[in-house]
Image (cartoon, rainbow, N blue to C red; front, side, top):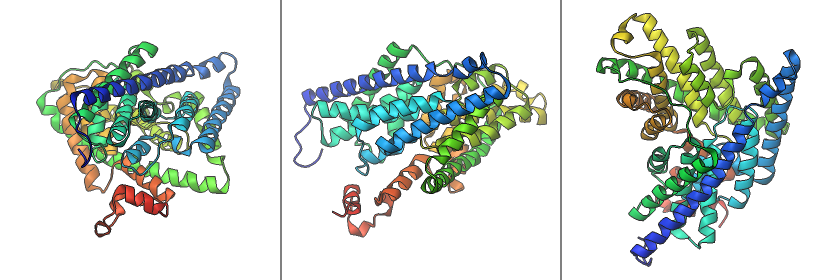
Length: 460
């Protein structure tokens, strides 16, 4: 408690939790409607396919996706530039006092442009928009209920957690997301921690009432023998490298898109839309967020060569789609990319040592599930969130120990290679573009806090 601040009595604590429930419910409304709207657009390529075929279908899909991508990029840049991309760095920066969340603009822009981008087939996840909308809805609740100071920052984080819970029906991973991902910014106390629980519960409940019970990614797995742990750790080593490359690819592609935007505005999102739209017909498993692709791969696992092709293709379509400047997250694309790599690794291991996996009661699908958590850990550097998120999504509780081994290996390799958490790098990039001094670059002897750094950047 800050000096001069009134003590938090049980009544005031209860009031804060009630406001957090309200913020979570608001998030659930936006998250549920967002999911319904995005899902309603998933099958438009199939509808076009009933009326067109051949190259006419390819051209039509390309034009539709290009138009949707351009619309989403224009709407974002015109009315709320901070609504582009995931939104997680914006939330973290706001909790730290370095960014401002203009919720009146972010909510409508993130919703509309996000539905257009994700529904068009771009390789983006819905968790980024729902996290950003969750934080924005929490600020709306804070303004309505006259909440400020530390409680306002805590509500922002709680709303973001509710947004993640809404996206994947994963309330426990949402709570851990605040603990791991915003550990540097979140104002911890019993009151604020309970607020995160309340928002996650309310957000998940309201979303289920609107869009139904999810996820549809349940994957049946069995407990792997202890002798298989070295194989899962080896997979983690590989994914540690992939995670660093993925983060590097995202940042470099964002730089390329920014340079092209300065030269020829909106050319880059137009090109991205054309390419992704064509792939919707020519190679549909290489595009879209990927939840349905994961379900298809684990049921009917394709050949090893096909999995390698999908892994390489989805790596590039993911980083390219994110650079278009539209709202969208990276969680779902990361999980799908990891599934392709994990399944391919399991097949390769089985071919290299025939019969060993069967004796250890392990299948390639087990490697695909474990890979999701390992790649998430290498990129986001939040292993506990990755493990719990995958378990809540797939129901693969039996693979918790292999996930721990793979996440340990992937996180260590990513660290040793000099990789850094993707959202931390995105936030620093955004702050530098805005002329704000990132906390890590403020000299200790100057005695500047994060707020002081923001004021100094504004010429205060």
